[in-house]
Figure 1 (spheres, rainbow, N blue to C red):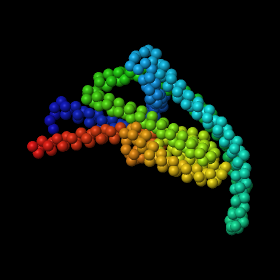
Figure 2: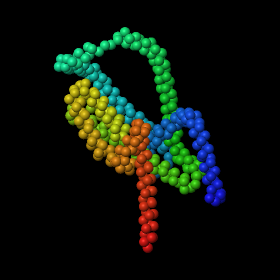
Figure 3: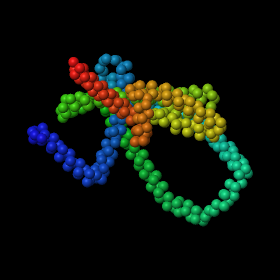
Figure 4: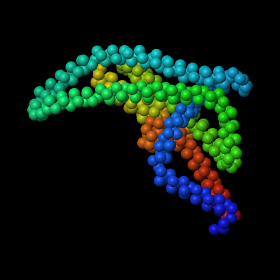
Length: 380
């Protein structure tokens, strides 16, 4: 290999990378602690970026309706205020709808639980009378009540201080969480008010330290990611509203209880891609089981019918089309993301896979066109 300036530069880069990798490998615990401390320090700003991204979707729509095509100093603050009020308004409407329904549900449960427990007791007596061997087996079980009581007292004695310490830690965590969210929200407001200035500064910074081709490619990928994530957020919210309305209308038509509560609950849990509605199904089935087991069974059947309609028709077209990702890859993204990062992974991996799918598709098309052109030239 010729030792010209370019090759010497590459060798220096390899040596520096090797030294850094060895140092990090030897001191990986300190590196992880430092990374954790930096992440904790940056957490409010990361939360602020997420809030800014979410608020930017409705703010951009509102801004397009306010004096379109004209630049006004009050246009951005007014759009941002309207977006914040819109989000708070949706949350307030949901609270006003859910809280009375939840209170009514608790009252009904208070009346239904004693009857439910009496029915369980009656069924248990019937089972014991039919199968006396169960009673004989239970009577043969020996319990050391003295040791059990001592264990309970010891747990209560040692647990008092633990409960107090846990309560104090929980209170501090809540205060810290509120402060972190407050800082993040203020940071998000600053980002949204000056997003064009920040974008120009980032472009100028990358253009100064990177090659024009590299910087241009980063800008293209960033624009694609922003568009994909925005479309995904819009499509996911629309799909959740559609699914919640479907359950509310269906349960109302069949005169089943908790129609409003279950509809809102499923709408919220449906924000978790594809599998979130099953959480609402479990809660709804439990509520109906206490009132009427047959209604609980009917609700489960209705849920799976609506879930099939939503999973095969609505979700792939609303969310899949919004991010440009085929249905099969939406399912793969949700499964892999959930296994890797839980609920957050489910939310993030669909738009991430969509970006990767678009980039890979463009690269495949480019390479295919290049090979075809070479074959045509060779044939001539």
